[in-house]
Length: 504
Image (cartoon, rainbow, N blue to C red):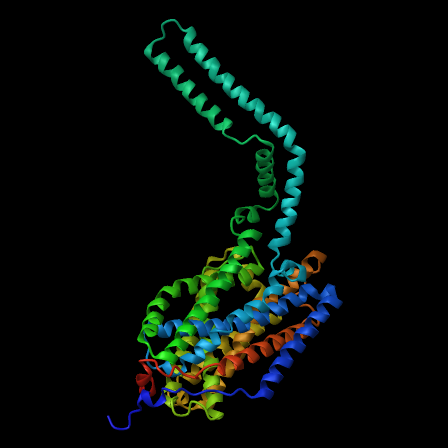
């Protein structure tokens, strides 16, 4: 047992001092980029629709990295993992950026910025369909009310007539009586059903509005329970509260454990992480349903949440590898992080490269094999012209075969420089993956009304770059602040000894 590290020797932790110049550069890029982006937006309002896609791409990329950090934190506690204790604080710091990124997403959600209705077409289409339906309902209300009133009166009269017919028969046979009584019951049931309809002015208006709404936009009518503005905002608040609260609570308990070493914080993190996981999965799944799958409300995929989760987990692990390496280069974590940790992180990255590819192929295969128009339209758009080459080069070869081949080699996972190169490569592929999800919707959606369907919007890539740099600067600034706010590793965690001496 000689030579083993003792966690008590590291109980004071290790604190990072963020370079002031680096923070200033990140903040300058973030604020300057946002000022430029929104200056263009408000000075050229005709560009706002195209710019909405750019801002969504930038926000969802960095949000996926922060959410991935939260996933690894939850998994670390729920599985009682010991090896990752020394890098868990980096996971927590990454997760703590979730509220900042979600605040940056507000321009997408607030209609006055001009992004929301361009991105999620069901908003304006639903509003237009409801407006037409309401106008039609107002015009038909009087006739409908008169018709229904007459139907109610006729139904009641039919019941009374049937009863009178029964009473007029002096001594009906049992069969004749049974027939008349059955007829009366059927007429009473019909009259009762007709009478139950709400014939107040509000009730008639609602009935007719639903009728004309269904005739004018059947799909939006069918999905009206989910695709409506009230429930939309309820879901956005739910996503913000759940993801932010979980990240905040786990980081707070982790910092409390650093301060007093009370094992109750350790137990609470383990116990509650198991309970938090379903809420985390629900929030992230439906967030990407709303923000990404909702770009085309007529399309759907039941594997969508898992697909986006796989990319998030894979690439947040890449960020963790880069953070560890950067801190070690700056003189931090050298005594607590070893090549064994790199090996383990590399194995997890390999596992999620395979998992991402499995989910991506399964989604493609099942949709293509079923050949349902509402499903295949997603891939038809992305297999057309330039996007087909893009798909094969960046997603099939770049996102899977290249990192899979490199990470299969055991020695590679213990060479920090090489594994960092793979992490950077994966992050670039992740950005291209999200770009492939979002941007092909921009051209067809924004040009369909003109009758000239275009696959791309000329010059819109400039907005993509400005948005990406802006959000990256804000992300980097707050990440540096979080890194410097506490010890770089949980210095009093009971599993610290195991992590310091891990061998695999």
